[in-house]
Length: 102
Image (cartoon, rainbow, N blue to C red; front, side, top):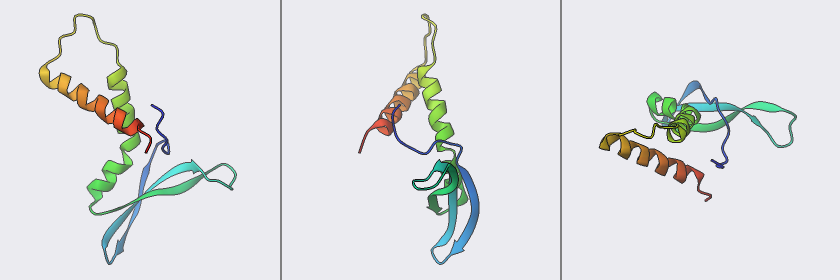
């Protein structure tokens, strides 16, 4: 996949209470233009519940798992269930969507 994104790991950092509710920061080590080397940078802020921040922070790992799943070798006599075929189709569609240039 050739999508451009900050590679993982992404980490949830301390939440901050605001007038709009809780804000959860997502940080990652990234190259910052004009600075030497990688820096611990805020790549996203999630306004809502902690579960959403957990999900966002897992995005690189989820992407890697989808890529491994879709690229895994299968035996020639492999006969998956309809549910598994549908799951693979959704995973491939998501990978294609993530690879689109906007």
